[in-house]
Image (cartoon, rainbow, N blue to C red; front, side, top):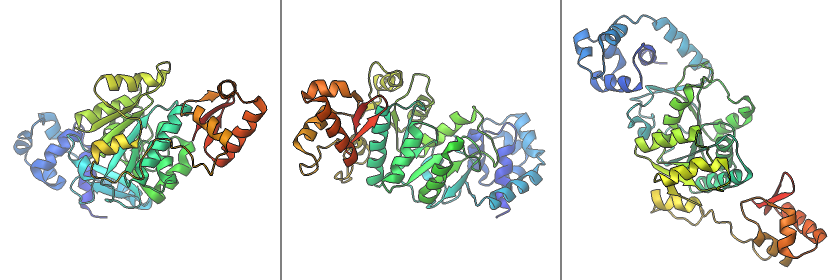
Amino acid sequence: MSTDLHHWLALKQVFGVGAILSKRLIDTFKTPEAVFSATEESLWAVEGITQRVAKNILTFNAFDDMKREIEKIEKGGVTLLTLTDPLYPPRLAMIDDPPLVLYAKGVGIGLDIYNIAIVGTRNITPYGRSVTEQIGSGLARAGITVVSGLARGIDAVAHQSALTAGGRTVAVLGCGIDQIYPPEHRKLYDQIMQQGLIFSEFPMGEIPNPHNFPQRNRIISGLSLGCVVIEASQKSGALITARFALEQGREVFAVPGSILSETSRGTHYLIQSGAKLIENTEGIIEELFPQMEQKTVSLHVADPPATDLACEEKQLYQLLSMEPKHIDKIIEESLLSPSDVSYRLLEMELKGVIRQLVGQNYTRT
């Protein structure tokens, strides 16, 4: 690994040099080596540099620590992308505070040009799961990379939906790239590495500290053309990602939900604030990729072919939506006998067109 990387990592470790100031230093001096070789007077000429920060740069002497970090990177099979690397995500490099270095694992670095972020609550509802599955798979089938944060709930479903549809997905971590958080997502982490990328700006071994996640969120939005929020409370971290997206000039989309659901308050707030309301993948495609073929990306739940469902099954299917409905309500609306409804619902579930949830509630798949 190039000794040049020692200086990139070192600059990231200088106390007082954050992402914005790092970018200004590189814009001015072109390379980290030149930053460390600069005179105090030339450093002062950079906007935002104080006398103390200039001194921290000139007296930095922890290069041996950078050697140890590079050894961990090489041992872990990680690729380190610097801000001027040709494979560094170009859209991310354009934000005001891009990561100075980006740790990467997986396949196809540099392939992801058309990215859409999907974020939302960790406390996912059946409705949120269904919508996320459909939007995630729809984007993947359209050749769009799904970006999210590997968190529980919406994030995990977004990643998995893209993978299941045969598409690519990118996970951005709020910890070191060698740390899997939450731990139950180890299998998903491994699947993403086989079919996409894992990114982190944090050093090897960094634990998932709470203050890391807002930093992580600016990368999720920075990588993407637009950000889709599916279920979020008014205090959700997903709203932080949406705010970053707006600041970065990205499109923000929000999926409406029930006015009775706490997880709809954040998305409804975004819609009231000017986010584009979407109900399906087509709304995203029409806004961001008007030239794209849309034959494979419709998220409308189409009626199944007549050959797949019997007459009574079609009747029951028409009574269902993405919102869970209890079997008693289905029986009441269908005017069929309880035993007939139970049998038909089981047949439809086996055919994969509906899903049974907890408490004998049903939704379309």
